[in-house]
Image (cartoon, rainbow, N blue to C red):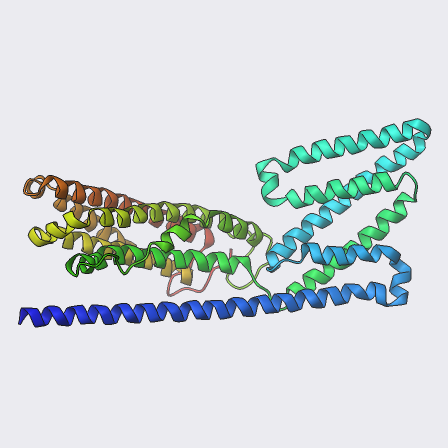
Length: 423
């Protein structure tokens, strides 16, 4: 009777694993199709923008107004048109501000040099170019400037040098006016077209953060639950994957870029002006720390496979307690992820804290002196390492709960019975 029950449980586990793999493959294929569709839409929008600015060349009345400076409109479209609306707005703002400031100061410097005349004119131009290059490069290296305004500083340096140098032999004010006008035309075209079927970095950052909660929950739960299958069935590799944790560890630069571009976006959908995107970065940092610990848990279980196998045969209650703790932690992560996804206050905070408190008590039970005294040295090292890492996991989940609570207050998350609040 027991053997038949064991066979049925193994078959059920295999069926569940195959279903999960198939579901994951379907999600991957759907994600690839959505990605291809977005790329196609973006390509079409860039093509439309280039056609519109090319009219400055193709239509004689427009070409007579701007002349060869129409090329600057085409360059502007190619340079600033980004995949998302926020990135296009941010880059366009930087280009516009850099062009105006650099062009204005360049005109003043060129006019001053022309008034001096003679050899002094060349010396003045050289000094102006040196000061602009040195000061601009210094500010480009400043962390805060580099993060949001590096492109603007670069355009400032480029415009200043072009105006100053070319203004020595040509009409400086006419050059500045015509180039600024064509750049403005290119910028307006980019902004208008980017708002057709727009892609928002804010939505991507929000969605990726929510998915990270669920992916880490699945990983920690699978890491502890499926390991029993690996041990009992003598498998060489577990069914869970730690790839998610590794991808989370490499997500910092992407999240910072998304948050930077999200700040440029106008009010849309669920996100208003001055939305606290910096809190998403803090939550992302804690999630990366949690991913590091979960990765260590997985490697710890793999390294101590034989000790865990003997421990399961003699003291299965301790490993079952660890599995239950993994389920509690996974449930808490999913609750926090769902509350962020729906942008509502998490009503299960009390339950989450209670489950985390129970998890701490369970870990104390596993590592208690009376339990440890009955184990061999290898088993003690294996279970002690696992308990230490699980305590770190519980602490990081508590930190995440605090960060999500702060986000709820700042962003004005709603309750289930109230209407959404806009920040």
